[in-house]
Amino acid sequence: MARRYDSRTTIFSPEGRLYQVEYAMEAISHAGTVIGVLSKDGIVLAAERQATSNLLEQSLDNEKIYEMNDNVVAGVAGHAADANILINQSRAIAQRYLLKYDSPMPVEQLVRRLCDMKQGYTQYGGLRPFGVSFLCAGWDTTFGFQLYQSDPAGNYSSWKAACIGENFSNAQSILKQEYKDEESGSGVVGEQMTMDDALKLTCQVLSKTIDTAKLSSKKLEFATITLKGGKPFIHVYTSGEIDEVLKTYESVIKPADSQ
Image 1 (spheres, helix red, strand yellow):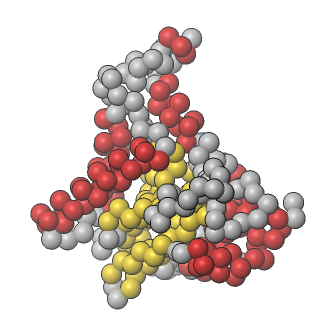
Image 2: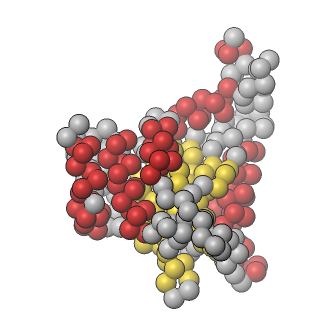
Image 3: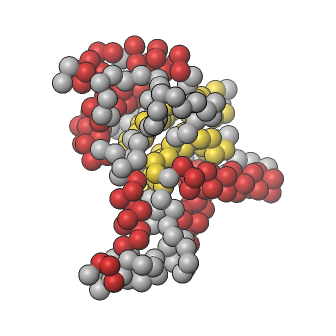
């Protein structure tokens, strides 16, 4: 029966489903894994780079992690061309806000504008949903560090630790078990999770969800957002730095290699 209702995004099935949106989400579940972990000192983003051939010239730019603004960095899972369009639009939105108000755009406001654009492509005929999900990590003066996940339907939600892409359900299970979520007397969530803990947990999850014999910088991208001098600082790791991180947390990666 689905074939009668999946030709357009504007047609609901009798069960109230939009099949084209569900197909877009299914495409994301086959994309490279992206993981985000929130800590008291910042946020770690890691992504699986899916190289098709050793002969392929690696781009100088990242293909999975992008800077959206000075205070927001995003990891993407899905169609890269769709992601490029949305990233460029998000950057333009953030710069227009900066020009108008002379201050960085709040993280959630930028994510909401991005999701409004996604939702529009599910509502009008002749368009198809964007086949990409985002993990957006950012900081602003109102809410501090924040991690948001968005999907092709235009929904978004805030997370302490999240995963999108292939094997996301397994990754979410590990994150739920291993994430340190204790509240201090001031009510600060994740007070016990440091950046070192976040990097260690990220490596542990990657080793158990990525289908590879050994983790290496050729297949991974890392980025962090922290505070430096009271201002957000985004650091995208080089290949050498990624190898150093993997070597540092080799103890949590080795068990996956021996499986």
